Image 1 (spheres, rainbow, N blue to C red):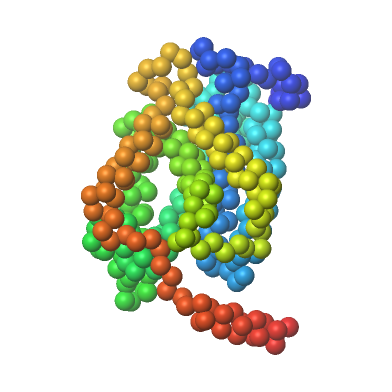
Image 2 (image 1 turned 90 degrees about the vertical axis):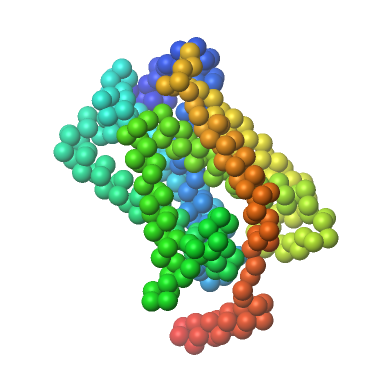
Length: 317
């Protein structure tokens, strides 16, 4: 076990980047923090599955960020406390987390827990991805923004679910795992890209909201958590955009010098490739059928449904 000075003091600051300064080496550690803070994406998915989503979804996001921020901080403290000699990491498994578990729990216990964690994460990811596909099907009437001519957008008559989209998501999610057998460098780049892409996807609507707020076709309806048009809202939005861009740049820099084909950080290359290919596909054919999400629920029907539910809840209470 390490001492408190190793965890919270300068004793635990070790630069193994091979040439980067200590400040940049410290910033490289933000990758684990970014994974911890991406929990807001998971809670955002409840917005289409709860009543009074304008209140429930923002509250869930706010609570989850605070909760996982504290839990993630405690987890990192425990990992440093139990990490053992630094020269033994990441070990034969090439995973520092798994190596620490083996050191403190034994090989059998750590492998069982690791398998359970991986299984739960896989189920969670497939569920979330399938949910997003289902949302795309419902909102876009079968158009998934894929060049499949609506094939994966078909809803099963028997199960009333998008089975093709679910199977497509499941099989497509397996590919990065199989890629690990061929090139660990490539699969690590994909996983690093996940944190970057997720954060970037959130600042795009924030940026467009401010740039096109006076556009005649924009019909913005403030929700209950709206900060208003004052300085507070602008400061929060600008800080969010700048911080996300800063972290994305940090997470795209190779962490070890000198840079070789084996330790190169390909996250920026893959990100640029995805953006370019998506843009080319949209220009060539995507713009012809994609007109943006369209609601299939009329406002009058929605108000009537909410009022009926509120009455039923009041009668039960």
